[in-house]
Amino acid sequence: MTDKISVLLVDDHAIARNGVRLMLGTAADISVDGEASNAVEAMERVAERKFDVALVDIKMPGKNGLDLLKCLRNEYPRMAVLILSTYSEEIYAVRALKLGASGYLTKDAPTSTLIEAVRKAAAGGKHVSPALLEKLASLVGGGATGDHENLSNRELEVLKMIAAGESLVRIGELLHLSPNTVTTYRSRILDKMGMASNAELTRYALEHGLI
Image (cartoon, rainbow, N blue to C red; front, side, top):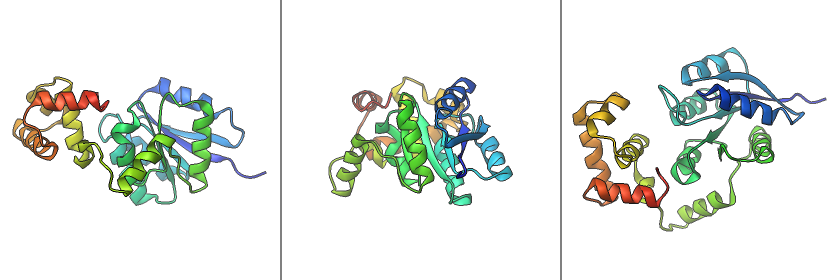
């Protein structure tokens, strides 16, 4: 009998981890052997034992899932990392793949898709949905893409908060940045997006499903 695929779950919500564990538990060849609620705990778990696949949420306290993805790919390149998030593919999937993720799934993915993605990642492949595959093909072919793809991860984070109606002062508090730094981010975002106001940013965010 071959060894089971060893999985690490990284999500700050215990209920979400429980749900994923139950879904993966229906596959005889997959075993959830570790859990973490944030990036620090995740790095501790992978230092303690070997995992084949890490399933990582994006929104977590401290370092987010993309930051953790970068750390894991740098320090444990043999371990596959799948992003499992509430955010739509439109927002983060391309970024995650560029950073070395083995795939991107939303939390409403059916059990069969999740299991297939874990198996594919453990085998060295990548899980890509038809919609994401079409977007990647467009990028390779030089097709038009959303302007938010040109933003850094932190700039995208600030854009989403601005579009959600948060003040620059509040954004600074949430991201532990000075008001001046947030103002600088806003200026960069407007410049890269070719826009002149928060209203334009909000309209764009709504049209592209960023909020």
